[in-house]
Length: 238
Ligand SMILES: O=C(CO)[C@H](O)[C@H](O)COP(=O)(O)O
Image (cartoon, rainbow, N blue to C red; front, side, top):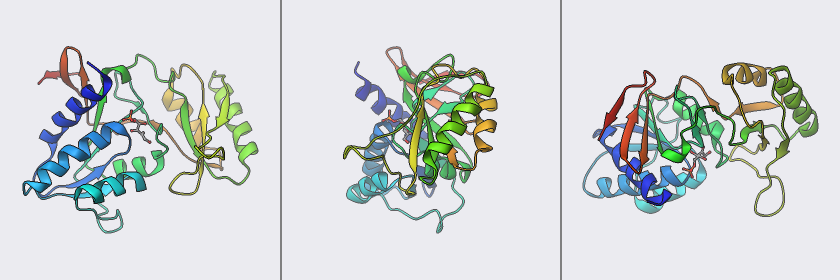
């Protein structure tokens, strides 16, 4: 089965967590977009939800498909966030930000009573870090911030290139918040808590893509079917 089919299966299973009247945080990326398409079908059938999008890209898709939207300012407390991830480990710690929306994604997840991650099984890892860690930074002092990140990583026993993400136009990729992304190719991050804390001490770091203790459940689709993982490692077949 190709990854797109698996993403759609995970998105389909996530719909069972959505109840009529919910205020939903809606993630960014191809898996989240598969979810938006399915949600829009429900909305067309009379299902009532309001969505708070985690990016301008997701907002545009929701508007195109008729999913009602509010800003986080209008709905500062959400029932559920549904989002994809770049990596998910066994404790449901995540790397996110491949799509460059990590700051809004983390703010929306933190404003939500629960966060359900949807992914194909290729995203499941033993140790986070094979996917380069996205770190959102202020453009001011970019080089100084990059050096500070490298030093912080070294203190955590990590090494690897930290590079500025480049957009399609050849210029640094700019997030919806007007920041840049540095991608840290650390290969393995055995202690994500330690690296997270170290990154938060750097003034130019706006946010990073390690999500800790935020995931209520991960719905993972694979060749053997769709499983729901919880932080307690209980698994459910669908
Ligand atoms: O964190 C994200 C965007 O910032 C995405 O959730 C992550 O990159 C996964 O994307 P996809 O579903 O396309 O694989």
